[in-house]
Image 1: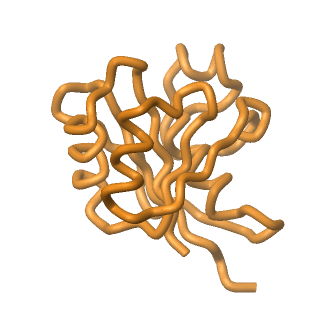
Image 2: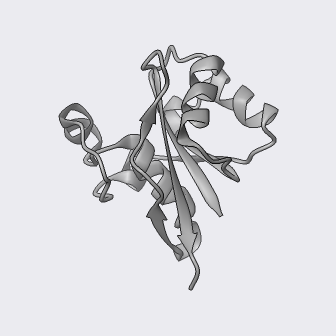
Length: 122
């Protein structure tokens, strides 16, 4: 299963989210987002793509090893990249192991990021 982790600013539009997902380069089978960032735009994109929306708390992504790191994100969320950590959390749900497919990518407007992770077969 491939999960797209989405990082976003509260004002991110559906277009920004779609742009970030497209930039990731591969269609996910689910979307993961922080519960506090599950905006109407996120719900609309997940619904229009017919993808399950997985919601996580900040504690679920803390201390996840990511490929990229933002000092601002690290100080607030205790991980280097929200999108990458969410992708890992979503793909590793139910105790599975997961790996990132690539570093996070940004939408052209910079309002959203996306990263993909896949479950590692046990």
